Image (cartoon, rainbow, N blue to C red; front, side, top):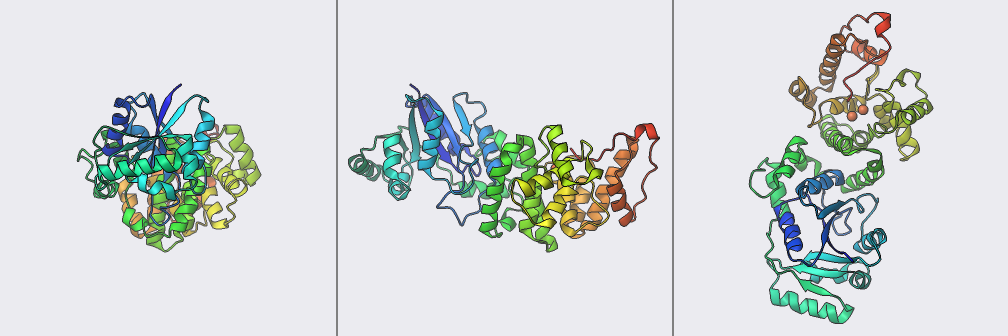
Length: 414
Ligand SMILES: [Fe+2]
Ligand SMILES: [Fe+2]
């Protein structure tokens, strides 16, 4: 029999308060291991912008990377729609051995909220509860409330004999937005992740986006998550946020930019033969080469697997690897965001980012010049669609290489 401490949280960001709680629970000897459950879309937080689940999962993962008894679960964030504790418990129970015990770990404030949750009687009969005292809630009041829950629900409630490190997630997040990450409030590995992906960049601006759009994006993220590896998901989320920022600047639909950004590489991590199959179904014989086929394949998947019908979104996904001679503002924006999202590190990025703030065509021009220079160095031809984009923007193309070098066309796509 194993006792598993279940600590749920938004982890936006994962901070040292979470870390200390995990350590205290392990040291208490009341559990054998801990599962951190990254919260999905919470029923009571519908008006608050929460960072994308993929970011929060990565932060939690890094925050406990050195603790072998701790596992981070994506059980909730794999499921679209609202997450209820009672459902999560049932799913988790299905993954454990019948004799394993679940111990729900909460701050003492939860004692007073729990009866308003969905099916508290099922929650309290299927798990033990371990409570950490929180400031603002008197210890005696918490004990009295626990006693009441024991009487009313036969709840099995115990208290953790360790002080909680109380950090306000809002304050930690605000410090992160200001770039103040060396305050000892966030584990170093988490701070490095935040910096690398500029994870709270554009936060104030994006917080003004309609919550319904964020819920829709969260649902799409659930669907695309199983198709992508960690690195590709982070990249896709970065393109999503950056594209939304640019859409805001350039008067394009923030919603369409977010969806196209999130989905643009949805076919990228599939087996090569599968990508080719979907690309063929998309019906564009010019984009069947290995480095490029995930564009049309992704557009096909977005439409047929995720139900996205908007032709502008599908088009932006289709052409994101090459550009084309007839690019919409959304096409430009996705192409540019893909090349210079915050975690990209290659040459001349700052100039492109600066241009993108005011002049997307100029940003596109700079991107294409970089791609052309790269191809020329490699003695590779540029794709006909990229050439059409170059011609449209008045940029001379380099001479094509000898015929024997023409079998591999490349872009800067990674
Ligand atoms: Fe791509
Ligand atoms: Fe990409």
